[in-house]
Length: 166
Image 1: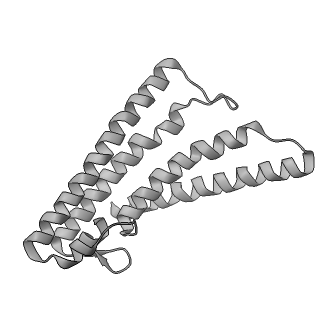
Image 2: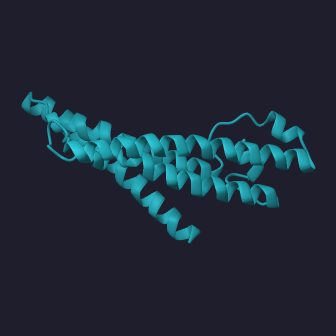
Image 3: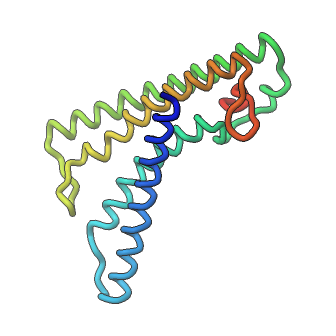
């Protein structure tokens, strides 16, 4: 399950990055050679960047590579370190729950209103769905990292799980 989820996360992230890169390059070429800007390129770049940001946050949690203050985590041992690991995990989960709630409310509002993107006329909820989907993935990965941290297993680039989520 972990490998399959990682493959999906990595694949979607690579697709989002390739899309942003290709569309931005296309816009530069058309501006330079045709002296015209393609209206949809900014729309695609900004909206796909939301997906890229959410997926990147999830991968950062999974790999233990996101920024954090680890001084206290490194100084603590035993039960105190476990308590801090759980508190950090709970704080991250609460953040993702709030983001998921407001993200889903926004998706529902956009679905109900039929809101579409200005240039492409694509349903806006397709892009906004990144917030609740990314939040659910973030919660799954945070639980996974927290449990591994409590077991003393390592993740990422040589960090313990407790350090990874600190």
